[in-house]
Image (cartoon, rainbow, N blue to C red):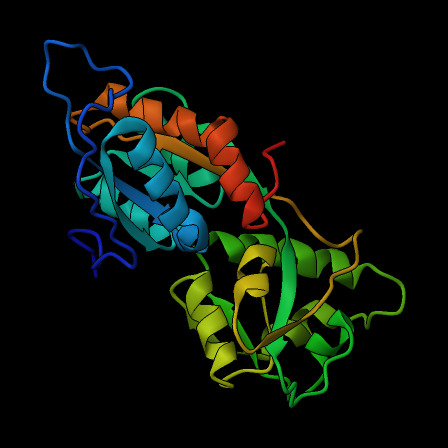
Length: 267
């Protein structure tokens, strides 16, 4: 079913504009806009409150934020959902918008992440190694096929299958253990926290911040770097302000906040 607009925001930040603050890109004669609508990958939910507060202090404008799978948000923009900025957990979805003429300017890479195996704190399945993900009976929670973390996970699984000591059928055995596919990576983590699955491959930043979660590290040679990219949406009424925000996230202040939440610099 086609979504006709963004879901109710997982995070909405509405702060009164600070009197006297200047807005990047605004002229003294024009009254600056007071709000930007940002559609962001679910894995960015952690730092978004800090980012929004810091941006408000810098610009005097607020952010209205909705989070979900990057692929779902891209589809919403394609179908006319109102948005000024799109922050994706990959480079593919912003590139698709740009190629379709739905972006104002080029996408900007602003962060990176890595993957890790998240397990419940009590670890009922007794997972000691990523090799155990292919063990019969292990319940794996995964994301939907179009969600960026799934593409990254598939790369990890292929790399693990090539490591000495892993079974020849590791990839197919892993897929056979998937018992649920969720809308986004935060939903994957939530099911693991509730004990509805034994493991799931998620972003490091989400796993480290999750309550009731333990982790199993991936071998360095099997991990991948997930590059996050953002774009100004073509339909925005405030392209200069939206571009200022995107540049700010990629700049020193935004990077410092993302780093505090475990994100890496974009390569």
